[in-house]
Length: 187
Image 1 (tube, rainbow, N blue to C red):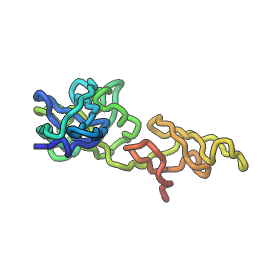
Image 2 (tube, rainbow, N blue to C red):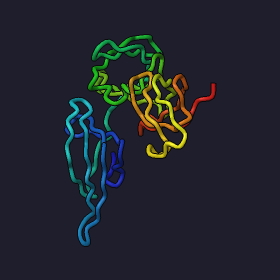
Image 3 (cartoon, helix red, strand yellow):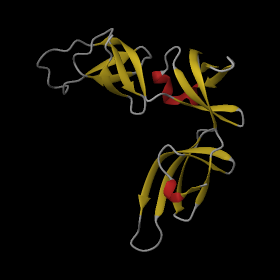
Image 4 (tube, rainbow, N blue to C red):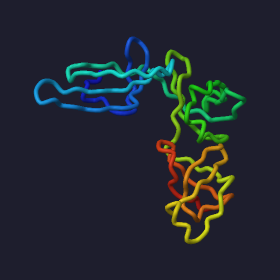
């Protein structure tokens, strides 16, 4: 059982027998009275986002989720296919269930799939993934307008800004939580 003081971004709780994840969180303590916890919650099944305010005395049940380690295989249109690493069973997630994670999925990547009542509802990526740069503009020395970074496109189609020394064909590490460049991978 969670108290309101346990609430934080990324926490998964159960409300009305459905799993929710906290996507934004703010704490406020008015001059007098109880502390207030303002949360933006996303229903992990339907994707609906709701705003709720809770008092410090409110309690919450943890979401009854099962996490399984799976391997990403491929996608076909709006469907993404994964294989359970223990029993080799395959499951399919729809595009809206995968969400922004599609920007970082490469063949054979190990991920965590969340199940609610034996139904796959979401995906958790590793914090960092290595991706290949497939398109990078050349950088001209002295080009200070762009602030010492340039845009590149990764093998998944994701676009981000990187330091000027990154070239086409390089492998880079990307933080999947922020979508930002971390470092160049030495091969």
